Length: 487
Image (cartoon, rainbow, N blue to C red; front, top):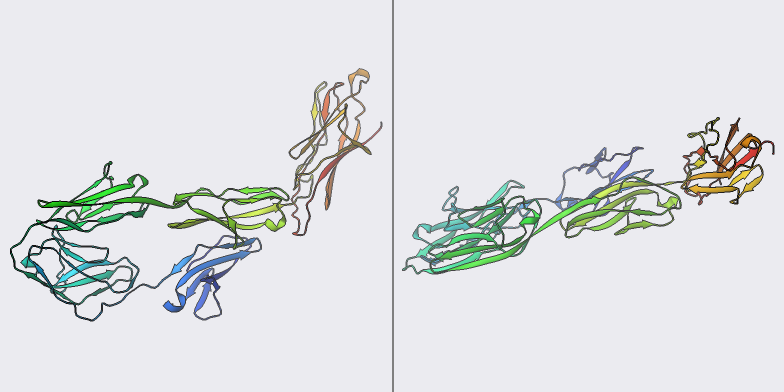
């Protein structure tokens, strides 16, 4: 049984059978990579549902369930079958009664007198593939003989046949009687894109004629009628093929009808599934996982291979505990699909290493200067500004603004000689820090010229990529500007 996962570091594999760990020390089992090899499989010990579980330091995921069953087709019982006497001109059914078997995909035929003389089905004779019974609409003297039900299992390539049943037609004046449907169909649920078979056969004298129709609609383009009208096949059935189908059997003495609804169902399909995601510590998560199907699929979640709830996944206040491998599983009666994704929780210390400030900025006279203080930190940092040892606050001169994770400082110049702001010459410091780390960048401004009452903005950019341990607490970052110079 194959199992292979993509992972770094290389993962470890284990298998479970019916929710019990498989003991790989047992010589009956061996592993090749992630593949499980069962030596001399045994029906009593190895039948069941298998799951492959894959783990590395980032988490655990589970595979789809795989069922292992053992096909079989037992012999027919050795007891003789009783003879069947029937009046000529009437109908008859010979019972097959197949022996115990698995799976159910059996093929049925009937032998007349000796193998391999198989009966050819026609408008008068029909073998249902539901249970193998043989129907003769109107018995004739030519039907006299010994009949055996021949059953084949294509899954295990095995065939068996029953003891013979003698059919003895009794000569009498044949009476006519109306069509009487013996093989009909009830409401069925078909899976989208599969082939659907409907059977309809009637006894009667004269032999009835079989007709098919779909109520209030045209028959599907992929529909095909065979075996003298007794079988309707719809290939690659689609939702638009859903509806009420009717079979009508008629002869000169009367008619009979069988009507039922064909429902077209669908296995789950993804509308939106999860993907690998990164979130800041302390933030919220809404992870959409939507599937369509008929009936509507249910959604359940696994985290590192363990059950983690149903329906929508919403988490408030993410912590390191929430990091790991998640699986969204959508399932209905017709199938199961799953999506796997890793959730990373970020706690990043600020740094200027990957986004350093320019050491020199030229500004147009009378224009505006914007310099960002843009730390990359997780969670979103808090900012404060200072000039020297003076902590700056919003007032008539200074405006402090934050947009997402970028801080801006705007202020108006005092009215100085020659309309130049010369009080900003000197060294400015931007400090970004969190509880466990800090970063400092020193800016050297040789000359910045702006008109009085114009705003300028000083900023820095800093990034970090330092993951916290699981014990780390919620962290708030901040940035500080210092002015070093005269006045």
